[in-house]
Image 1 (tube, rainbow, N blue to C red):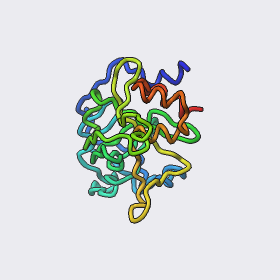
Image 2: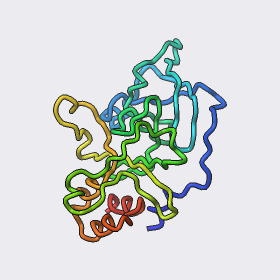
Image 3: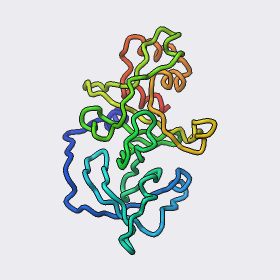
Image 4: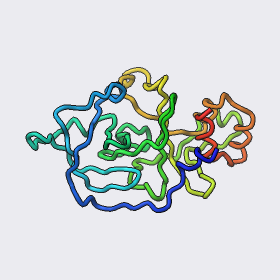
Length: 217
């Protein structure tokens, strides 16, 4: 269990203007491009406005070979800095934010997860909608929520990519990979209404660590 909790441990999160404004990244236009390693060409450098351990905020994007604007990079699904993968918050459901890419904290065979501390990473969280549960949670007498505390009392927004169903939207928006925020209804769905988890949800004691354990089964 210790290795599951370790990813939530952050000694100090520093947010600072980038010393070098331009840096080359591998931008992936689509989720499928990420899977196949097919980065956008020609190479693109992002003009960094602000950077932290958890996210990168860009002010512009330019092609390296001619310095022309690379507008397509702004809508890329994700980017890589060669070490970590960052998700485009433009596609982040109800907390979307343009020109911000947030680091994936957890990736396994089935799921990809972004954890955003509501205080330390508040600048990466956009239009924050307090909704979080739907009719299912209400029907089970569980208070709907979309913010999850950890054992230290920090509050998180959680984004979840299900590799088996990466395009959850239907209808006219089905082609867009909007990553949903994890809310009460999603926890119930993932756990198949497991009694122990339902009890924690009712008592408002379901933690971020419980979520990581759930998707690691």
